[in-house]
Length: 101
Image (cartoon, rainbow, N blue to C red; front, side, top):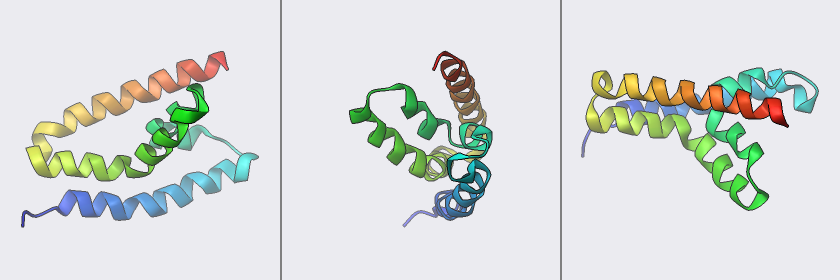
């Protein structure tokens, strides 16, 4: 079995990061900035119909594990620039779409 060090690491790190962003969201009374920045897949689901939003919720929870999977599969040095680019593009799109709603 191949070594899944990044997949396992990022899957485990998702839990404390999620607690961190929920803490700053204040249960709906705080700032959503950390959530929108760290979990753009999750918050991107806000602008789509309700039927699809559960898909984005699931992808958002698995986001870091998916990043780790690609880093394990193709090599961290090869994939990391693409992951950062996609993540930054989604953050930008999320902030631009949030301004319209």
